[in-house]
Image (cartoon, rainbow over all chains, first blue to last red):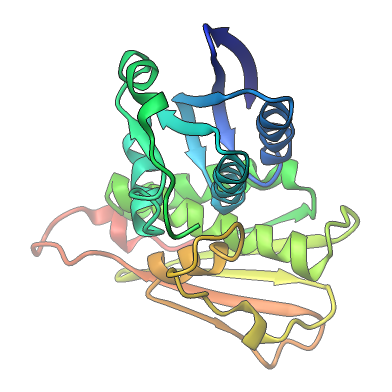
Amino acid sequence: MKVLVRKVDLVSILDCSGDVDLYSSPDLREKLLGEMKSGAPNVLINMTEVTYIDSSGIATLVEALQLSRQKQTHFGLFGLRNNARSVLELARLHKVFALFDNEKEALEKISTIQPFAGL
Amino acid sequence: MRIVISSHPRLLNVLRSVVKYRAQQAGFPESDVDWLAMAIDEAAANVIRHAYKNSHEGKLALIIQAFPDRMEFILEDWAPKVNPEKVKPRPLDEVRPGGLGTFFMHSFMDSCCFDDNFDAGNRLIMVKYLPRKASGSDESTSQKS
């Protein structure tokens, strides 16, 4: 898996590619939480090229979501493939995360994300 | 078929590839193939994290057996015994990191249980039945390992 971080105005986008599993999720966690802790006000993960995600990857995303709520910043995902979306749906997390179809939509809407009361 | 790997998470993708290949051969639909690979991945990841406590020095063996109506996946390790009560799926009401691996395993498999008679470590037996097919369909479902 590869994770590259880029900036579009005030939004940090993490472009991920490959499998997110127990081996690779620590790298995603380090970069994702590192970006948030450095004060990024808006963070998006580009999931377009993510071919697989397991429970350790999901745990990383939940951790990031909780951190974004604590810091009152915005966090979302876009471009999920069907398999990743199905995994989130099975875990009943698809309504907890802000999910967008593509980068354009995500950039337009990320600042409107409301905190989730259950966190 | 039996495959043995060290308890290194880098090798989980090998297990996923093998499971996918064997499940495709056995005639599972593509959607089930992905779920099966994930279930085995989660089971093996649990062994690495909880039984071997992230040590890469251990070994895992995956035995795959194909029958006309089902596939059986037997995952063995030689770590200290785990308490099966501690590896039950957690409720999904709580939104928190962790604890989903066992939930995924139980969701995809038709049965999933520990073999108490395996004294050397832990043996997890997972079974997935093939979807029912019309008679005379895909002969690959009758292959044996």
